[in-house]
Length: 537
Image (cartoon, rainbow, N blue to C red; front, side, top):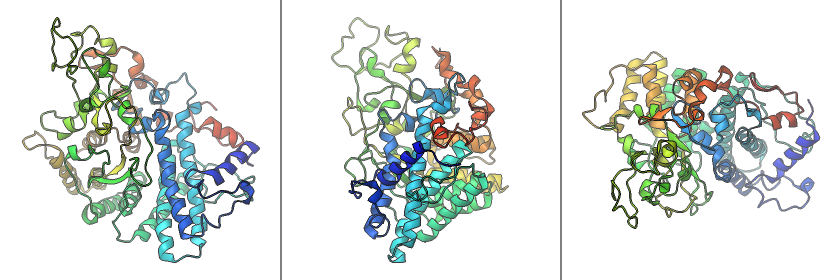
């Protein structure tokens, strides 16, 4: 079908005004813009690739980081509790809302297709550029990873997508035909792009912080193989990262670092948001989103130790916390703030049954009751604490880890387990646990593992890193697990003050294993591209 005038305007703007290249396109008339500088010179290609990272980061700093937090916060899974905001309609699978009109669902679709549009131009024109092949490979390999990453995200989240590898030009912008690509076609392109990128990296494991390197390309390729059920390839690639790469497991307390850069040896790829770093500087609100509002309790003030200023929007639910052994699992204290103590030295405690330094307890303080406990004293996620900012500051420049070495051990365990090589599966599973759990813990070392063991270890390790929804879908248990554990019905014996907090359990339907196509995009494509089954047509 033909693209209508509305989409013509949108794509024209997209093709020539994407973030990251505006500095280089100074012509006042878009019809006169050429690709001469941007895609045919080394300087132009370098800046075009740099622009891809800007595009990926841009979504992080929307007004309240809500769209990105929906994913990083594992919204709509079995381990999250989204109290408010953060696209809660989507996370709760609300049946009385047309989810195809939700801004978060539209934002993610547009983000990835914007990146795809740019990578199509870099790959097409860059491949033909008259520059040395060695230099060309440096730019193309990153562009291939970006395009593969974008399509990989889209195909897992929406299932039915449009596949395109051609740059948008004035010659084709009004003649595009849209149709649903087969899953096989999409994965063929993803695999081809990643394999090309990996070949261009060779054995070069070096990587600039905030940019894709060989480790990131292999990490993605391993994940793709798991989704394809190609267990042998997934196992081989995971072992290559473990045995040949420059990464290492470190102490849980040293991964999400207090300097905010999150650049330990476990980091394979992180969004570079540090305002002092080259290519960084996108402020976000993750510390607020994942930190409770303890300041609202009389006798409390914001301090870095408890996460600073918080909104209390996303917390771990009781099911997730039940998976840890508090006495032995290092992640329990390293990654979660479980309790808060009265810390306002100017507050008068003289007539109260509690004093400075005592732990907040529901009902002990007339201002901390079951009705507001979930907002003011729930568990906070220390993975996003910002120890560099003043506790009252409401933005952060912490880098955000996207791919982490620990996940490679779990991908290896999953691959070998599903391939019937249980000894190797147990081996890699235990290597991670030996690092994360102190000696003396019951069951620290496993002699056999099950599918549920792998699912639970994924939860312990990767909670609130944007992985859980995809993992549950890959294992085919998303709907079942959300029905069992989604949201929060009770915490520390305190019943949820609102049924909305656990409504995902009854709302979720079989068709929710995929997002709807954004209605605005269906309209822009002429209304013929089909909506996903189950959603309003």
